[in-house]
Image 1: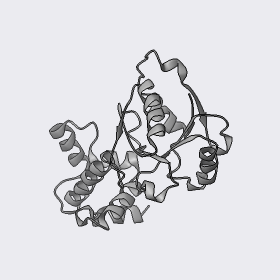
Image 2: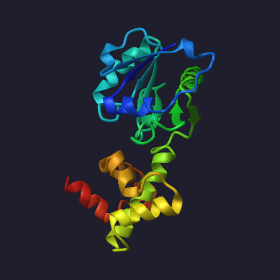
Image 3: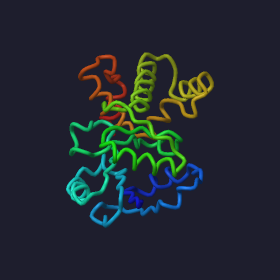
Length: 215
C-alpha cells in the first residue's frame, strides 16, 4: 500500500504530531507528501487535505480514481452527493488532524477497508459516520462557537473570560473563540449557514456574521 498526501505544511505538521503506534503491518505503508494531485503516479490512496480550499483539484483526483486509486478528500460541508461517486470524505478541520479518532464517510466497502488499514497503521481509529454536512465533531464545535458568540453579543462576558470558563468548567483544551481562530471563522460560518438552511437551531449569531464580514 502506498499513500500520497496533498497537504500544506501546517496540515502535515498537525497530522505527524500524533505519535503512531507501530504494528506488524506498518511496513506495508509508504507515504509521499505532495502539493498538487497532478503529481500522483501509482499510489494506492490519495488523501487530499487541501480539497476544501482547492476544488480545482477535482479533475486530477477523478483521473487518479479512474486508474484504480482510492480518493479521500477534506470535505466538511459537502456530502458525498456533491462529490464524484466513490470519493471518501474526511474531517480535516484544523485541530482534528492530531486526534486519535478520524471521522470519514462514503466510499465502497473495499476502499473503506484499505483506508481503515492505513489509518490503523498510523495509530488512528477510523469512525465511519453518516454522510451529513459537518460530520459530528465539527457540528458540535460549530454549535459551541455559535453559542459563545451569542453570549458575547448579549454582554454575558468577554471572549477571554468565556474561553477560560469553558476550559475550566468543561476541561476543554481550547475555549470556543480559540477554536474559531484555529479552525478559521469563515469555515465555521459556512458550516452553520449550510446547517441552518434545514435546522434553525444552527442560525449563525449576528456578531459572528459581522466579524466574518469585517475580515
